[in-house]
Length: 127
Length: 109
Image (cartoon, rainbow over all chains, first blue to last red; front, side, top):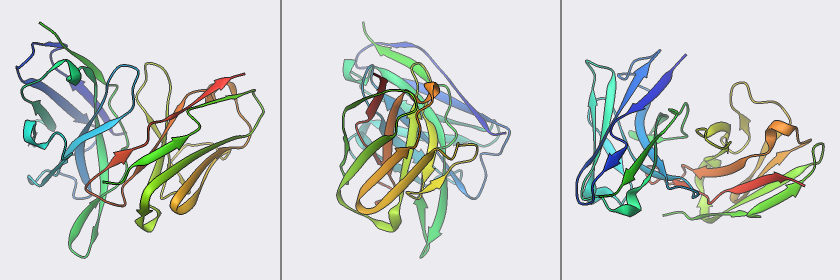
């Protein structure tokens, strides 16, 4: 059974970089049919897709965050990571990692839904 | 970017009643690439429906999805106590630009 678990600091100072890691168990991050991604949820608010990455390095990001986001994959550890730079209080949220299955349509990888999800980790941006 | 608008914001119903949740897209969602999730307090979202109408593994058949184009519906035929939660829709028709709706809270009347 595929499981994902987020880890990382729960408190980050404004203007610094938020860094989180997601560890995948029960399956391989080098799966040819999956992307691996991050979603966040500010307290009391809705869900926002941050970005997703394939094990080979192909990545897609939410345009609203693209300039500040980097997602990377470490196949040796079966992990993928999120870095979000220049954070402000508006980046305070529960951050989830999740698997996204894909299909190939005319040679293009099409991302689908998110399943399963990690349990989420709260990151607070405050001095 | 496809914007998803969910309505109503809150639905107040009693156990045993039927719940009908709406998700409307700002433009047509190709191939009915729409998913629904359930989220309970303090928990991660759980996939319920994908492809607008296909139930995910282990999801009870009281949950059903329908719709195409710009209008989609999640129906819970008879509400069980554990169904009171927040529900989100998500489109992947404009992949890789993935977007979520704002959510509908189903609460006990």
